[in-house]
Length: 194
Image 1 (cartoon, rainbow, N blue to C red):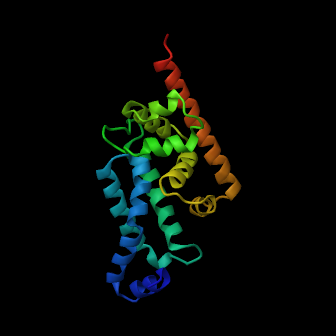
Image 2 (cartoon, rainbow, N blue to C red):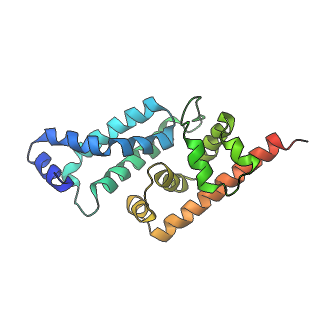
Image 3 (tube, rainbow, N blue to C red):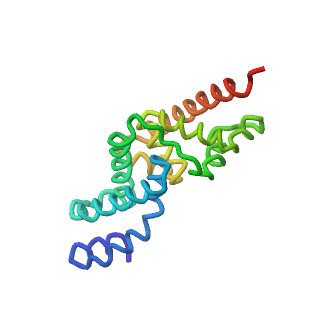
């Protein structure tokens, strides 16, 4: 069934069809949550909350955007609320999280095979990347997470965020520059002490 058919079935009372929506979109929603909270348990809790809220609000889904766009917008809002409520003054990093992030970050903004590229593979540097991401302004962080974690196009990100494609491009460029600056400063401070 298509998303529209599933939604119509659910709204007619066949709530068992919601399981198909969850199975289809849960991995993407979970990745978005991990991009914000960096902790599997918190991401699981947020994912469950997102799908509960989406189910309760399904009658308000107008179909003007893709269901995935609507769900990702709910996910981003839930994650931002979580961040504001629970982690305002806390460090989001915990050991053993997001091991594959080093490769994604490396491809996102490292342009050469230098010592800095190799440092990103180190756990300590991955933690520093997470710290730098935590310090991104919310809109930059949302755009970066949707781009690098969920591999959404700039057009899809624009739909999720309710902004223009040009604004998304600027947010991604600023996020990458901010992360480069933070990581370069970290590298210079910790590894160039001669």
